Image (cartoon, rainbow, N blue to C red; front, side, top):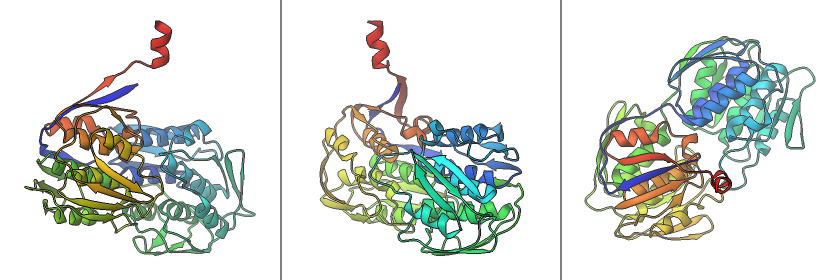
Length: 429
């Protein structure tokens, strides 16, 4: 077991490099099952979700070879359908892409229910709806999802009941090798949906409309391998932007796509923070005084739910009362109790958090209740005088590539230390 220890109160200064996007990487990695050939994937982040995805592929019979710290060669020719280990699948939410990939390649699929961060009910009913529209019969039994078709996947028309990134990606994967044309309406528009479509097109797929709410997929008989680079992680970039502002530092954030950050930049500028946009970087400058602001999370291109906990820390340090409305997931305010330990004044009413700014937060032991909540705890600790210890950091490491090293490189007093397992400690004594 490990925890992060931060002696805060130091402004972040200098430049930081953003890694490849977690949500795009896991989708592309598991989509390689569909390819039945060799792919070289570049700009992969070194995070636990990527490691788990690679372990799933190996367990299914793929050949996986690391070429360097960010590049992997994968050959999925020998993959066996229905062989994804349950103990790996349950470790991350995006493991459900195994279903779409197996269905598209074999005409059948079987995998356990996915895991991931626990911040409310996240049903897979829209995934099932999409698979059924492609001709699959879906059954759920004993924690396992099975999909079967009579003679392979056939094109179909799907209208999603709500904006769903996971189901949009899963149906794109399943339909890429289907017979006929598939049309997805009310499709998610997130950058990682576009990245997945671009990857499959580089392998010979015929996908148009990604990035809009109507996506058309003309199925092809086979796909071929390619070399492909994952896009930069907009949420990691947003996290460093907020951390710079919270610590009153000046930070250049490299390897980003500024357009992906527009909703975040707009709210930070509304708070009085200056942000300069370059071709592939943004520079954050400190505000003399942070102003209150109201935020509502929405599907892309709205303000991202995955940046909500981090932004809440900034609202805690602003003058006046701000409101934060969570328009995507239920139960995403569990981290608020941890911020209250540090002196935050936040009242949660359903999907709304009312945040009263304070002069400063105070150091306290806290925990990362999920991935982005963990990032929020890191930001709060960086902005706070004194020593803060953060436990359950395995959540943070699911989505942030070397966050400790990157923060230390821009002036943070931060380190990761081992803590004894309570059971082992008790047994030893």
